Each structure stands twice: as structure tokens, then as C-alpha cells.
Image 1 (cartoon, rainbow, N blue to C red):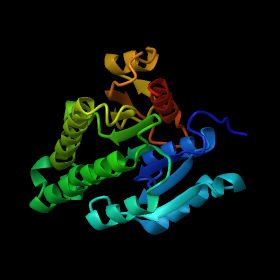
Image 2 (image 1 turned 90 degrees about the vertical axis):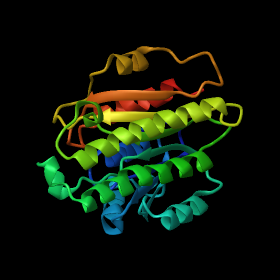
Image 3 (image 1 turned 60 degrees about the vertical axis):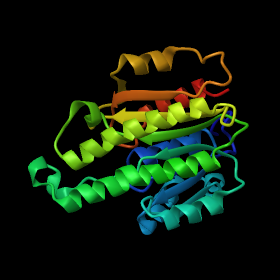
Image 4 (image 1 turned 30 degrees about the vertical axis):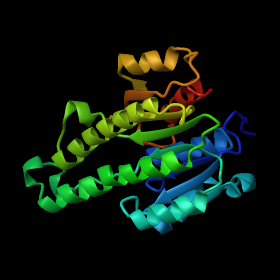
Length: 259
């Protein structure tokens, strides 16, 4: 029987949950270890349904706590529809792991076309803005709540695929800017925290590679009840979502900031 903690029965919305990667593993951790209600969102409705079924195999209780929703985060209409559907729920966590990598620019940045750039920014940046807007509108105001944007370590180290890399760099700036906006309005958003996570693509178990992240994971929560944080975590991450230690550490980070 999974343990029940402070997030039990609250709602976790996961974007990019059908690709067997970070979103999927986070959904599994939220569902199984924390017994949260999970809204699994992906642009591919069939794969999203299949992922939800896989997550709840041999667990009838979990099957009642997950919903699969086909959503294009770059579509204002889709996101407004989802926001209306979730209105009134006790949303504790919104995680955005949805992203695209332009195929023609995967190995040669100079090969990136205008369409590659447009697609990367439409999904990875404007889509993230839509997620951010939904999160600010839906996340609880009177209980600890968290928006987690998944960027990439390549935002700081560079790498092939300039449209993807630069869009992930933009996501860091977007999230840090939101944190400062919320901090200026902390009376209105006293318990809303935002985080940007920078996983790498190394096929290893979770390893924190930034001093800032190590300090975050080992420090005690602040005594201030009105502080909005932007936390940046750089890491290497396992490609195998069955080895989800990285997500357990992420949930520890979220718990350490709850108040």
C-alpha cells in the first residue's frame, strides 16, 4: 500500500505524460507513492490513454484516480477547455514535460529550417506560457502549490539542435521571471512556488550536478511563509522511466518547500 502524505487526494496535472519519459515517471510517482489524483495530458490521445492504463495495471484504486486528456499545449482553445474542466479542483502540482525536438536540426544546427524554429518555440515556449497561465489560475491559493517546468541542461551547456536548445533557455528565463512576478505579488500568491528543472540526457540514475540543487535538496525549508521561490535543478537523468529515482528526489524537493 502506497504511503499517504500531504499531497494525498490532491490533483497533479502532468503535460507530456505519454512518452514514457519524465512526465510519465512523475505521474507514476504522484499516483503510486503519493496517491494523488493525476490528470495525464498529451497531444497524442491514444498514447495518453494507453499510458494511463499501464500506470494503473493491477491497481483498481489507482485506476479511479487518473484521467487521460488529449491536449495540445500550444493551442489556446485546448488549454482554456482544460482549465474550465479542472476549475474547482484542489490542484497541488502542475508539471510541464511536453516538448518537441526539430528532426532536421537534431544533428546539424545549421540545417534547422524556419519551420523547425517556429515549431520549437510554438510548443516549447508559447506552450509553456499557456501551461504557466493555467497553473497560476488553477493552483491552490491557500495550500502549498507548485509549478514545475522541465527545461534541459543543454540550456546552459549548449548542444545540437539550436531551436530546441534556445527554446529551453527561454524556458528558464520565463520561469525565473514568473517567480519574481509572484514574489512581488506574494500577498495574492502566498503559497505558490515555481521550479525549473534541467535534466540532462545521460543514461544514468539521478545525480544532482549543481551546487545550488544540492543545497536545495539538503536544506530545511525557509521560515518565511510568504516567500515564492524559483528553484533551478541541474541533473543527469535516466532514460528508463522505470528507474525513477530522479522523480522521487524531485518530489522531496517539492515536499521540502511545502508550508
